[in-house]
Image (cartoon, rainbow, N blue to C red; front, side, top):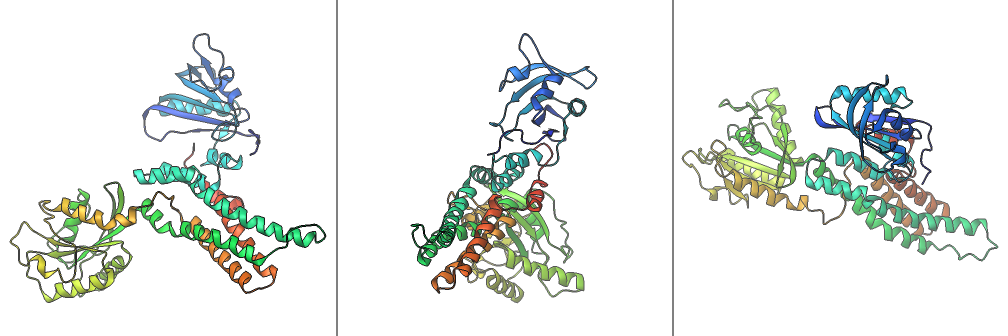
Amino acid sequence: MKNANTGGDTIAAIATGGGISAIGVVRMSGIRAIEIADRVFSPAGEKGPLSKNPGRMIYGKLFGKDGGEIDRCMAAAFPGPTTYTGEDTAEFYCHGSHEVMALLMRALIHHGARQAEAGEFTKTAFLNGKMDLSAAEAVADLIEAETESEVRNALAAMGGGIYDKISSVRKNIIDTIAHFYAVVDYPDDEIEPFYYEKMRKTLESGLSDIRALAGSFERGNFLKTGIPVAICGRVNAGKSSLFNALLGDERAIVTDIPGTTRDVVSERMELFGTKISLRDTAGMRDALDEVERIGVSRSRGQIALAALTIAVFDGSRAFEKEDMEFAESVKKDASERVVAVINKSDLESAFPESALSPYFADIVRVSAKTGDGIDRLLKAIYDKLKDKKETGGAVLITNERQAAALSSAADAMESAMRAAISGMTPDAVLADAERAVSLLGEVTGDTASADISGEIFSRFCVGK
């Protein structure tokens, strides 16, 4: 770990959101953070300056750049390196007035701080060795978390859930590579000979962990963006009404005119702690124009992409040849990933559930208009998606950059293994092994370029 305050800058930023709140937080980090804090804050009573009371929250007066009082608040100073950034830090807990925090920021900048860039506090923590790059990315995930599952996964990654798995594999490969070069560079020393079999075993033992981590991206992406659930059916089956009923909001336009929905309408919802991306699609029929043809094509595409399809049938109409053809096509495209819905139960039923039983195992009768049966449908959806939600307690990869690097690293490890098994020259084995080491380092930050880290920290809000 680098020493605290390795850089010359002291950065400052408002850490709370843009809305008015009871408390507003302003923070500083850097070599002059505590000194500047003492210039703008005066403790009440007989307490000394913040610099003499490290780690204590103190009540006092806050002063602007002209020396006039701007607030009465709490403040605290924390010497590095045992801080979030690894540097000296100071924080002010003011009243949540925009103007108070703006006046404070002007005072801090007047005394020598500068406005922090987006994500610069966390970037400083990364550069000072307080966290690896995967943990830094998890900080952004935690800030954006919308469900308990997202919170738990982000905390697991921040706690080293990704880094620990990768660094162990990476270290073992590096040790084996270093052993080879030691044998080559110091042939007269008594060093154990380099064996292909040992390299193969090293790569093989770590490969399953890296493959599993890379393969967790699908569930991790579901966790972050929502499990895709497509609502499809023939025109006027009540798809948009059902979409609105499941959301509890009038999101999609509903009319009696066939073909009202021309494009995919998507909204996220939470179902028993699981985030779902619910998608209303255009009605299935022979399109009357080019726009509708595109909409129907996109509907079929959504069935192929969805983790679950809700196939909607109009229960007030007789079961027709077109319904049978639709059922057959959904069963073919979605396999077992279907819940069939017989809608409009508030009207006289025109066909029994047995008409759909040859095609679907899960059939629910509902009325999107009255809400009858919606709870049963939600339960059926949740039961179908359980396997997509369960993580087994393992941390999941939630971004494409990490998944791509891990997948490529696993490919390089496999290539090195094949080269070792076939007895190829050492340079062929080591080239792939070294490539795997570099790719794994892109995830942890050991070999990540400035462009990669810059792009990652640009995701953050100012003040974090």
